[in-house]
Image (cartoon, rainbow, N blue to C red; front, top):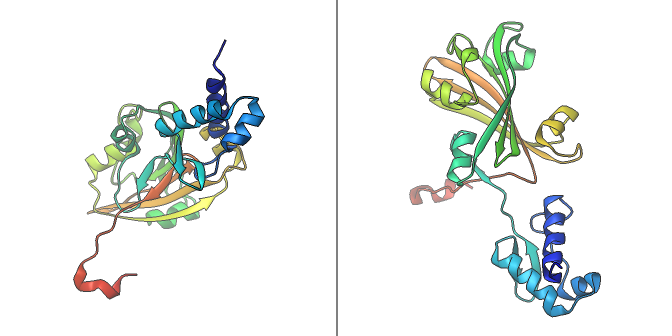
Length: 241
């Protein structure tokens, strides 16, 4: 028979994994858990303590116990490929190439790439996963002039970002970060509900020769976050924020 504290742990983990309890939210107290599962406070406390020790929960003295924010964090200022980010966490990267073809540039894509509307451009749609859990839907449009062999690549072995950096080294980039609601296809690809908010990064990358690619990178909001550390020159203290 399974120990009662293990049952409580499993129930809390299920609430966290399904999104009923989100990062930063307060979890039920020892008394509430004891009442819900018909156990002693000591049993409820053991379940909470083990989850705290495992880094799943965080306890604040006199305030309560909260779900830890362990979502992967990506740099807002440094351009790193998704595979590199995942490997840096000691996790396994997997990807699925959904689309790999030539298409006419829409007005939006043409504006970002600096080409005429309906110009043939290369397009890929790829889902990236962290330990088998989808964390990014990458839609990328590439100027064939700067990467003519783009569509010949096996992007399950070499990411689009890695390949483009090899044939047209990155010199600068523009990007916009915004919160969006996913459409039905995006929700399906990322294994999330249609009402689950996402982070969307729109990024244009340049080489010394011109604009190489435009990409939209969509991440489930409950599995991803953005952040960075900025060092300021003390000589310009009043000029930055």
